[in-house]
Image 1: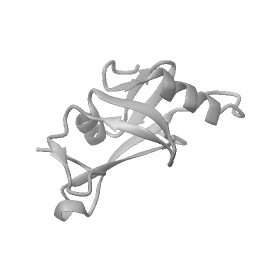
Image 2: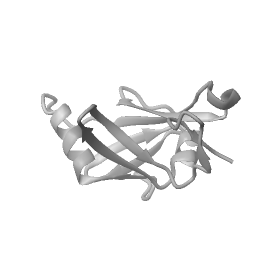
Image 3: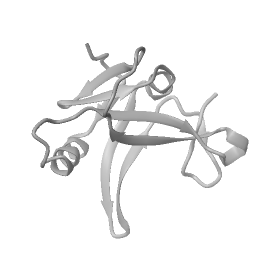
Image 4: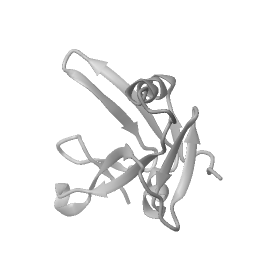
Length: 115
């Protein structure tokens, strides 16, 4: 059963996921992982989103707008309440992550910092 409130997907984000995966007969689960980066001596964190081909014991399920996410326990803790949106600009398109648990950004502005 999916835990409520971990991931909030905007309608625009959900629409992009459905369009991207339109050739699939089922809407697969997506794995959201919070990964440590080398930024700020390893204190920076980034987000990885991909199709979840498997699920391991202890994984947490989250659901938003009909999309199911799989997170490892540490990612679920760091990402609780995260909002995923899809943005298109004149320079390209990307998923935007707003994480209420982040205490700041690294100097490059691309990675979240956690306490």
